[in-house]
Image 1: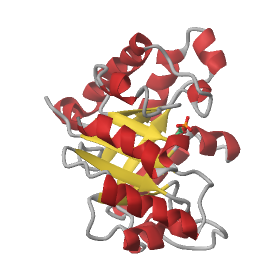
Image 2: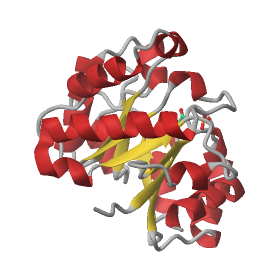
Image 3: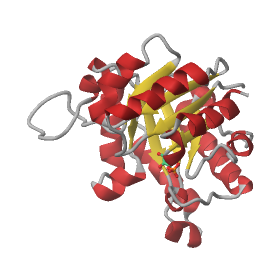
Image 4: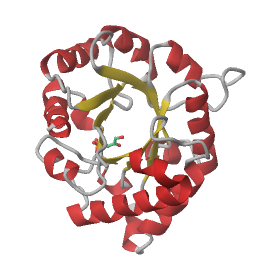
Length: 248
Ligand code: 13P
């Protein structure tokens, strides 16, 4: 089965209004008719980015959402608010959220359901720490995260799963290609157990130190359907190279 690749950028807590120029440059100068492109800026820029990218093929997403649609949750943003601002997707369960905010699998699953409720695609993140990999626990950890973070109701249309080994994020190092293949093949098998044939359409992204120079080889790995990119998504020239690899 051929799945259309997705190049997704996660700006994390980076970007002021001036950075919207990078998004516009990406859309204008790096067209990618053969893949999907998503940029997830900080919440403060979602509405402005969605407006700036209107009429282009580049979609806008959030980086997190609350599980509730509204209410007394100071500082939080709901999936409905992201959708209202023009977002098409939202990242949930990023390891930085899991670590910085103590989000467990149940919380991530609730956020994924909130995303679907608001009509957003949920980009659900999983990944092992270096200590877990060294202890030989990688597949157990990923299996548990898939079991706990992806709620019933996931489809190829409403869900993307991102494998982000925590030790590769912002580290300038990546797993070997066979290590990536091992995890992605395992994730596909786990999703098939959960969702039957629908699992074949779910895009599985690799994330962690994806750069223009390594994107093509990573995207050619079995069951890798694109990337979730942090640092290299901030500049149109860099992310454009990654988008080109996804659309090749
Ligand atoms: P880097 O691409 O900066 O390693 O970040 C990966 C990531 O966490 C994307 O969500």
